[in-house]
Image: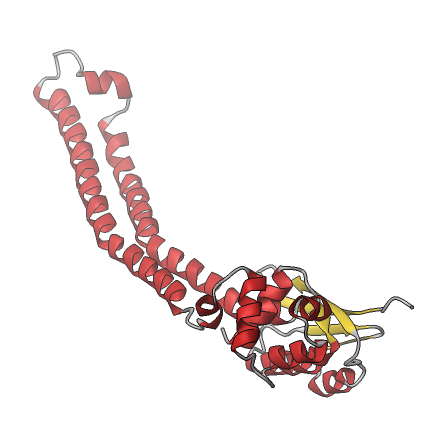
Length: 262
């Protein structure tokens, strides 16, 4: 995350407007706008003040490397993938034990019926109260059930990986909008917001974002550009998002924040 993006994110997390932040640093609001838009960069003295206001060091403020978080997730995904062969091996052992148990049960019944027809029934026969034919007929169903269970468990790592990928994709899609253009947003950045929506709609045709402002509700690129001309740079706007069932942003509702009359 760049310095200007980090300033926007932390300022909004503290619920400060640009004017509030400017007052804390004893600078003009325009200076804050230039920092956050990347048109200008704070000098060393200003960096120290910003870090102090945010309760962090200048090193933390200037650190733009966020890759370790993503790498740790990918490492967890690899670890989950390594467990697959162990689960398969364990299931094979269980399958062998179950099949041997069924075979011994059938063998015991055949022995008691053919070899020792006069002697009392075995404990297994007494408990189950089923004929040899019934047991033999049930073997295919038992094998099918066990096979389905093994197949389901073998697909578990893939299901976990698919779930991780979907969660990661949603975060990547929503992250930029929720970080930079959410809640109280300076009118100076509304043109940038509309540009980002147009780029996203062109890049992700299956996840279109509709923008609603006053009497206009559209996702058309030309209509969005026309809508951008209606935003006043000297005004603030409130942006609220609606999400689809998969968690992706599907609609952005923009409301003008009226300035209190003096």
